[in-house]
Length: 143
Image (cartoon, rainbow, N blue to C red; front, side, top):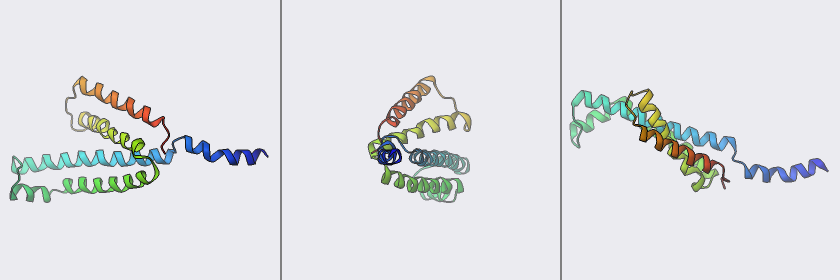
């Protein structure tokens, strides 16, 4: 009797909580998108070093198109999108989409730690608000 009752209630318990696998997939998609941005930035820094100012002209397009870091960034965005499509098949958009704001958090960290950019305190405060909002969204049902 006890196992029958547990079996009957187990699905509803699982539906109320957010599956760890779903959160992991969301985080993977977000991380891929953030690393893609970092790769695109590095690639564009290389282009600027090579040709100077980038515009909408043949020379710029050629320089961008022949920069491996730019292609790596685009590939990573593609992978991120593929993972995101799986996420969207398993969660409500209003649940999943706020997690995309984690890219702001990751980009700020990359900016500071990898690109060695100065990050003003107000930006850090904004990221704290973003993280708090995502935490609150994560406490809600995903469907």
